[in-house]
Image (cartoon, rainbow, N blue to C red):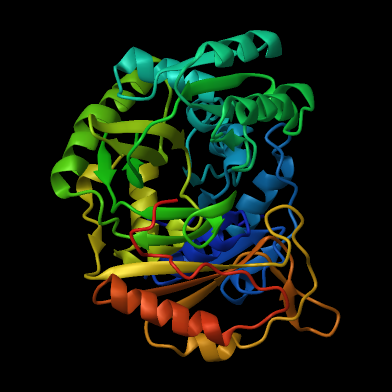
Length: 446
C-alpha cells in the first residue's frame, strides 16, 4: 500500500518531462529550492540532467494514464513540470491533473506546471492564436490563413511588401520562413504545403506581414487569474555571426534584453498579456504555466510575432541563472492560483548563454563526437554548463547526441562581463565540428 500523500510542509517530489538544455536548467534551479525533494526525469539520457535527477522509464500517454498514476502514487509526486511543447499540445497537463480525480485509495493528483491542451493551442495552432489576438485586440502583424496552396500562392503574388510564411502547427521551430523575394516565398510555401516537409503541421499556413524592428522575448507566469512578469530576453536564432545563415532553434541568449525598458514592459502587460488572459477566460481555457511572447518592437509599438506556451530554449538557461527565488514555490503557486502571494526576485547584472552546436547543424547534425573540457569550463567564475544534445558512449565518455549540444551560461555584473565569462568557458570545451557564434549578447539582431 502506498504511503499517505505528503504534507504541505514536506519536500516536494518532482516529475520532469523533457530532457534538453531547458530542462537541465530548470532542474538545476529546482534543486536549489529548500522545498525540493527527489527529481525524476522521464526517459532521459542527458548526462548533465542525470547528475541532478533520477532517470525513470515511463510511458507518457495522455490517453492512458495508468502507468503514470502508479508512478505518481509510488513516488509521491507533488509537482509535474512539463518542459516541451509537444506533450502540452497533446493534453498531458489535463491528463496528469485528472490522475487522482477518482479519489480512490492512494490516488494523488499532483500539481502541474504547464497549460491545458486548449491553452497550448496558442503555440500548437498559429491560426487559432491569430484569431484569439484579433478578438482580444492584441497588436500583431496583419495575416491571412490558408489551407490551399494555389490560394496561398495567389495571395503572395498580390502582395507588394515582403511576407512571412508560417506552418500553423508545431514544427520544432523550423516551420517559419522569412523570404527576401517572391520566388523564395513561393519556394517556402511549396516546402510546407506541397512537399509537406513538416507533415500535418503545414496543413494550414499563416502568411503575415513582415514586421520591422527589434525582436525580444517576454516571459510571464500565469495562474489563470494573475500575471507575473519575468525579465525579457534577447535570442539569437541564425547559425552564423552577424545573423547569417539558416534559422536554428537558438544559438544563444541574453537576459535582460537591453532593447526593452520598464515602460514598454508595462505596455506589453497592459496591451498583450491582460487582454489575452481575459480572452482565455472568456473561452473557459484554464492557463496555468508560463506564456512566452515573441515581440517585435516596431516604430508603432510592440507587436506580437507569436506565442509559445513554455520556456524558450536557450532563453530559459539565461532566465534561470538570473532568477532569485524558490522555483518550486513559484511553480506550485502558479498551479495553485496563488501568484499574487509570491515575489520572484532577480539577481543584479546580466546572463549570457552561448550555444555550442554539432557539426552539420541545423540541416544534418552529427552525433558521436567526444566532448572534452567540461570540468575546466565549469570552474570559470559565474558559469554553468547545461547539457542539451549529449549522451554517454559505451566507454562512458560524454559525446554529442543532437544539434544543439551545450548551453554555456554565465552571469556577470553586466553583459560584457557575462559574455567574457561565457566565451572563456566555451573556448575550453572541444569536440570535432563545434559550431559557435561569437556575437551572442551583442546588439546584433537575429
